Length: 250
View (cartoon, rainbow, N blue to C red):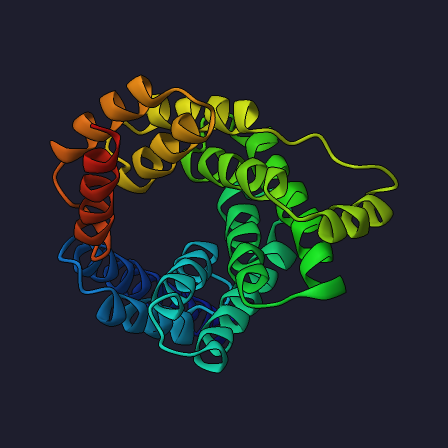
């Protein structure tokens, strides 16, 4: 009996220390993200997964950062390598909790990235699944700003598909899904309300207003965007793109 208690107490303290280590690594990763050192942050989250393979937060962080870093790669194959890793991390998180909003967003975002570099049936199926996962994330958390942004992006992209792509999407859905610039604007505005400092959302909202013939609102959004401090390694590039767009509208 005494031996059993000693073993039980030992296991308890090992698990406690492991949990503290995982929490420490995740906090380090979050700080590195704030410092715009995303490749280093990804390594910290991967270290956390070595200790706790079922940590959903670490899995979602690895998925999101893999997609972000992959988006900066110079060629399709390099991008796909990161995007497929992002999808795998998201799949693992969803197996642990199919209703977790971050896990659903991570999968939607990974598929969105993959759809940018694929075509044909795979792209069309991804377009359908992006919406399903993003909507499920919003069912769990209606103010999940990243999923709101992604739904805005989905509406813009589906509304701009060519005739052949729309025909293929109609077959997959059994009818053409409802998508419009107006719906995109509504999602982007909800995202802005949920997170007023998300710079990429401002850029795409301005583009949506421009596409909708509302240049005055696009100008207002871009002016607001120009005053926001950069939060991610890509934000200065987004702001530079926004500046060019603003100059074209004035």
